[in-house]
Amino acid sequence: LRSINGNLETSTDLLLEPLRSYEMPEPIKTLKTLAMNNEAKQTQVKKIQSDLEGAQRRIEELETTIKIKEKFISDMVKNSDAKATAKQKLQRKRSKLEEQYYNTRTQLAHAENSMYRDEEASTPKREIELYKNMAIHYEKRMNDLEMIKQMAGDSAKKVLELESSLNSSKKQMEKLKRQLKKEEERKSQLEDEVAEDQKKIRDLEEKYNLTASKLKEMQSESEDERSITRSRAEDKKKNLLEMSARISHLDHVLKEKSMDLERAADIDEKQALRVEIENLRRTKEGLLEAKCNLDSKLKENPLSMFEERKRLECGEAIEMVDVMIEQKNEKICGRKCFDPKNRKDMEMMLIKQLSNLSLDEIVKLFTKYFYKVTLPKESGRCFEMQLNEAEQKLHQLELCNRDLKNEIKNSKVENERRIIYLRQQHEQKMHMMFRSVADETGSSGYDKDSEVARYKRENKSLKKRVQDLETLFRASTAPVATSPARLPQQEIKPIANSAKTTVIRRGRKLIIEKSDCDK
Image (cartoon, rainbow, N blue to C red; front, side):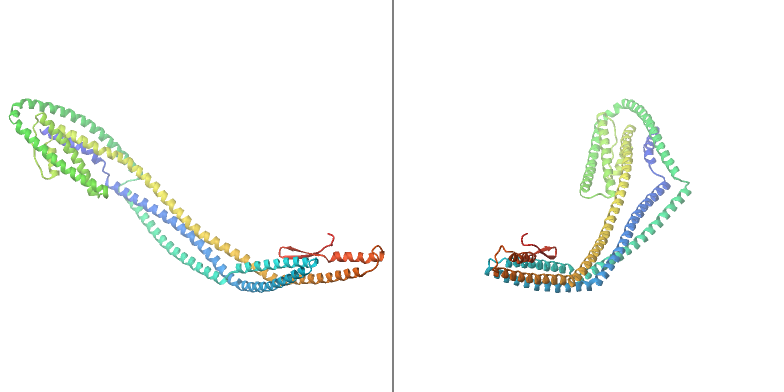
C-alpha cells in the first residue's frame, strides 16, 4: 500500500509538472510587461506625431488664408469708391440712353404716321428701318448697363462677409495652436515615459543578466524542457500502466481469496454503492444547474473573470463526477468494494472521492484531465499569434485612418484658401471692367451719339437736295433726247446714288454706309 501511495504521489506530480512548466519566471514577466507598455506608448507617440504634422500644415494654410483675406478686404475697401463712381456713371448713362430711346420711339411713330399718309413714298420706310435699329440698339445698351450695375453689387455687404470669415479663420487658428501645444506636451510626456521604461528594461537586463538573445534562448530551452517533460511523462505513463496492470492482477488474486467474505456483505456493499451513486447524481444535478445559470447569464451579458472560472470548474467537475459514477457502476457489476462517504461541500467531497479512487482510476482521470488542459494551451498559442497579427493590422489601419482624417482637414483649409484667392482675382477683373466701362461711358458714348446726329443731319440735307433736283427735272421742258437735258440727268444720278445710306449694327456700334441706288 505504501508503494501504491508513493506511486500515486509520483504520478500526480508527474502530471502536474508539465502544467507548472508553463509558468513564466518573474523577471521575464516583468520584462514582457514593460516591453508591451513601451511598445503601446511608442505607438501612441506615432499617432500624436501624425496629428501634430497635420495640425501644423493646417495652421500654415490658415495663416496664408488669413493674409489673402486681409488683402482682399483692403482691396475691396480701396475699390469701393471706384465701384460707386462707376455705378453712378452707369446710372447717368442709362438715363441718357432712356431719353434717347424714347426720342427715337417718338420719331419712329412720326415716321410711321407719315408713311400711312403717303404710302408711295420710299423715304419714310428707310427712316422707319433706321429708327427701329436705333431703338433696338438703345434697348440692348440699357439692358447691358443694368446687368453690369447688378454685377457691381454691394461692396459693403461683401466686406462684412469677408470680415466675418476672417474672424472665423483666426478663431480656428487659435484653437489649432492651443491643441498643438497640448499635443506637444502630451508627446513630450510620453517620450519621457518611454525613456524611463527603456531605462527600467536595461536595469532589469543588467540585474538578471538578461538580453534579448538570452531571453530567446530561455524560451527555446523552456520549449525543449517541455518536450523532454512530455516524453518523460509518456514513459512514466507506460510504467504506470504496467504497474497498474500488476496491481490489478494482485487485486484479482486478493479478490479471489476474499470472495467468501465479500459474498456475505455483498448486498450491503451494493446498497452503499447505489447510495453513493445517487449522491453523485445529486451533486451532478447541482453542478449542471449552476452551469446552466452561468450559460444563460453569458448569453445576456459577458461574465466576470470569477464567473468564467466558476463556469469552467463546474464543467470539469461534471466530467469528473461522470467518470466516478461510471467507475462505481463497474464496481457494482464486478463486485468491487468501495467505501462511500458523503460531503456537503463539493470541493471536500471531490478530494475525498479522489483519495478513495484506485490507482487505475486516478491514472485514467488525470490522463484525461492532462490532455484536456494541455491541448487548449497548445492551440492557445496559435490564437495568441493570430491575435498579435490582428492587433498590428489594427494599429496600421488606425494610423492610416488618422492620416486620412488629417488629409481631409488639410484639404478643407486649402480649398478655402483657393476659393478666397479666386474671389480676389475675380474682384480685380471686375474692378478693371468697371473702370473701363466708366471711361467708355464718359467719352466714347458721347462721340458715338454725336456721330449719329451728324449722319442724320447729312441725310436730311441730301434728301432735300434730291427733292430739289427732282422738282427741277420735272419742270424742264426740253426734249429727252437732247444733250442739254442729259447733262443735268447725268449730274443728278451720282448725287441721288450718293444720297442713299445704310445703317449696319456691329456689336455696340451703328455704322451708316452710303451706297448707289442701282445696287
